[in-house]
Amino acid sequence: MGTHLLVELHGCDPDRLKRVDVIRDIMVSAAEACKATVVDVAFHEFNPFGVSGIVVIAESHLSVHTWPEYRYAALDIFTCGTVIKPQEAVEYVALRFGCASPSIVEVKRGVIPGASRKLPHKISADRSAKTARRPLAAVPS
Amino acid sequence: MGTHLLVELHGCDPDRLKRVDVIRDIMVSAAEACKATVVDVAFHEFNPFGVSGIVVIAESHLSVHTWPEYRYAALDIFTCGTVIKPQEAVEYVALRFGCASPSIVEVKRGVIPGASRKLPHKISADRSAKTARRPLAAVPS
Image (cartoon, rainbow over all chains, first blue to last red; front, side, top):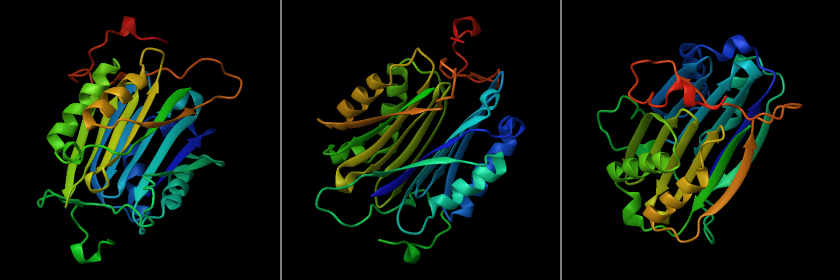
């Protein structure tokens, strides 16, 4: 199964929710903080303000959408496998956004009837990808 | 507020969960089917099989992760504003993946205490973006 954390970040510092370069850095650092393998990123800034961004990781994804006018950000961390500690990414983002009280809902995804094993995370099929950093032997099956 | 659909797609046709080009087309078409404005996409194929992909839309995002070996895909559709009908995207993806019985959990995101209005969706700040297709005057505030 996968672990999906739906995180409500109210009461953030609005100045930290506006700049796409800052938020991209925060989200990539959050992925690295929980030992995820970053595969790709896509971030966009909107008018009049607000940022949407995704970090695709070998273990699934992190996403964020910010509404600085409401001091609010919606954070999702969807991870598979046994290595990642998604709570560490939540704590990192909340700290950087100035959110004192993140609200977290955890949802189990991909519960296969009759199967006890966790869904494995994946290895990039693109051999040239800069992100294929984890040797195959180290991947949990 | 935003509407976040967490969709469990069990019993899919595994052959439809393997090819990144096919899944990218399905997800972009799903976004268009529910009248979302596509801003960016990021899709990756993994070894031995499986695809992860994100469609960033002006109204938030669609994401998918597939495990063809389990005939399973995890689909998320996170939308804001009043225009988008995310259920239509779910129906489209389920049909294309050959899933007869999608399981949907709806979560309200960004509920602002004391506020009754919905969080607005956003307009790309990148004027050159191919995806800034919706004129400003047509955007719900």
